[in-house]
Image (cartoon, rainbow, N blue to C red; front, side, top):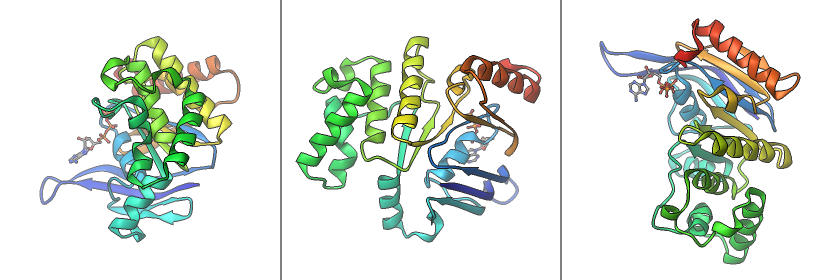
Length: 250
Ligand SMILES: Nc1ncnc2c1ncn2[C@@H]1O[C@H](COP(=O)(O)OP(=O)(O)OP(=O)(O)O)[C@@H](O)[C@H]1O
């Protein structure tokens, strides 16, 4: 469902060129939950931004569900992003003065969806994420863990083909991180959502089925979960140590 073919990304101009991605190729199947890990500055967010069509590759191609973003005009691209992709960020990106319900339906409001359809979708996704009791609260009155669940609800309400998560547990305590990862994992299995998640956190990564490691703008390694989550967690820590010598650098 996602094909990244020999993608490069160069920032800057003239003498100050910097190649953040140096020929990355990656294939993700429908329903896969893939983690992207690597040291700070290795190109993780750059890669996620290219997949999310927020930025364009300098060369190479990104194809999502058979569609190549570079072939779309501005308007179709915005529509494609709104309909096919979901985004979850570390900082939640919710509107503090709106209620939880208003935040969740915002993408549908922008699309001019019927109120009856919005209400049904809101109720369905709220039930999946266990946030029914929060719907009338304002974002400023809920906790960080609750806010991330609301952000996930908003990113999933339009049933995107691909969910892109950049450090979704970055601002959360251990318990909330666990809750959020459990939810993402449930959404992945129950809705067969394809999820791509950038994370520094080996525990969060242990919920994925596959981890690709990126270093200096290149994919360096890949591990697949074969057995229990705790064994996968150990495998991830081992790979991180091998990659950088010290897992603490991540
Ligand atoms: N708009 C930009 N202009 C110039 N350089 C950039 C730009 N965006 C990213 N870079 C550089 O590209 C490299 C990769 O950045 P990126 O944000 O993708 O790394 P990352 O792996 O996500 O890092 P972190 O884990 O710290 O978020 C870095 O050296 C960064 O300074």
